[in-house]
Image (cartoon, rainbow, N blue to C red; front, side):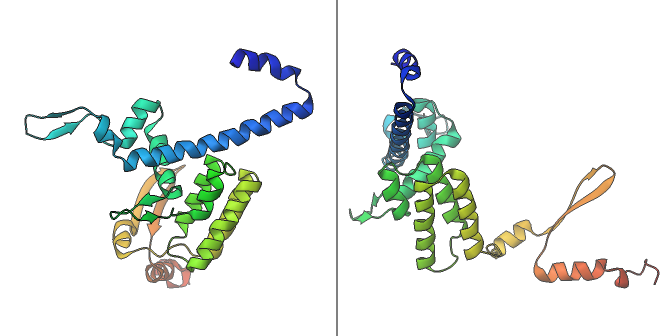
Length: 231
């Protein structure tokens, strides 16, 4: 097929060549969604346990050949572990699932799911929309988040990825202008003053502080409050 394709493409007229490229792109977007849906289905079916050989270690622990679905996909599909996890996470957000009692659970991103399943949004575009939606979790109202998803999906289905990036940043800044407030646990893990390596003879410090801590630090650094500064 590839030899025939390479030989025939140069013979096509410009309109036919454009039409071929457009059809190839449409097929590619459909295939992108198929990959995502397949990854989510494999993970929900716990396929790694179904196809893995297992054995008992000397400590009596059952060891599986594949620890998780991503490991199995890496081996079976010859893709990276990172790509496998990306497909699983995005596919899980774009495809419906079933609850314990058999009830159908709608996709996490229904508008994006519908357009993606029709081959209108590429896998990369869907990933960008999904990441933007994760950034504003807990921000705004449910109506505003739904409006953002619908707007970004429209852009992803009609414009290029550069335009999608600009629109996504605008929506995130609109719904979460100051960034998400850290939890108490995150404050414990992040805040502090960290001394980094000197750069070209200059000392470098990284500071993660609350508003109160930052104000106190700025007061301490102000020239008029510094006892070593001549008045």
